[in-house]
Amino acid sequence: MGTARNAIPATLIPGDGIGPEVTKATVEVLEALGSPFEWETCSAGMAGIEAGGDPLPAATLDSIRRTRLALKGPLTTPVGGGFRSVNVRLREEFKLYANLRPAKTIIPGRYEKIDIVLVRENIEGLYVAHEHFIPVGDDPRAVAVSTGVNTRDGCRRIARFAFEYAVRNGRKKITIVHKANVLKALTGIFLEAARDVAKEYAGRVEVDDRIVDACAMQLVLNPWQFDMLLCTNLFGDILSDELAGLVGGLGLAPGANIGEHGAIFEAVHGSAPDIAGKGVANPVSLLLASGLMLEHAGRPELAERLRAAIQATLLEDNVRTRDLGGTASTVEFTAALIKRLGAAG
Picture (tube, rainbow, N blue to C red):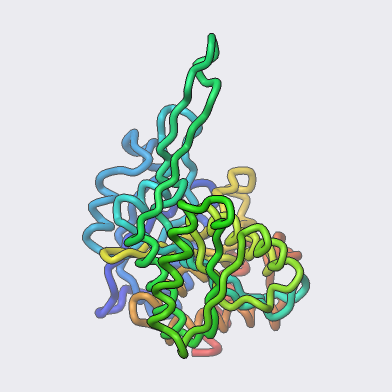
């Protein structure tokens, strides 16, 4: 199927490991939805190093600057050699301050009827990585020091993003997650700024707050009490993976990184080099990420069709990859999903 005439320009980064396999599957499924995107395919991660010696090539950055929209498979950051995380570099380069991580039960079995959206501040906190060592005696790395940075403007910005998302999507409550009892400055400013923004949404969105360790425990004991979580960078990173665990793992968890001048949508799992090339990878995470991308690009009806078809393929047709207890290959799952879309279309 060719590209639709009104297709939206977008950058496609297949990624490393199983990335090319799940990306190919996702592109084929989107073609079955009418080819809403016109792709510029670029490299990053290990593929970027192999192509030009840089895990984040200039051509890839230039493409995202043009399209302001990207779909990204999992990337491998080389160990050693001075390479920083490509994901962190992308967030910084395009000021993708908001990380959106919805977690919704598709396959019953762990926790039923989970529907929680986590909003994570994406470029501040401890991830600014202002780190150094202090030598003591003959040990040059005797003491490690890391400085976190939260700005009031940054905290207000992510809080406003969360509350605006809640209003647009009919969400009723936001829980602010913090550690202000100990990290009184670093997370105290986050709690203070978020409460301040919350006043503007009084009567529309309920708000409460939770210390992060208590929140982590209560997500296991009674996750249904939560609707949305608003988190600092580090806490959001940890709790978003816990949320994924409630609904079946990272293979069922999409992610979106959104800023004022661009958005990058991604599978949140790793590149899984141990199963790369074996044809058994689960493409659902990237498929769900492409659904978030469709919503962001103004095509919510296609996103809804996609999610409905994924659910029907998994639950009614019982076609699942082996990580979900099935036997289907990546190609077989993709074919079953495309058939579902055809039947629904």
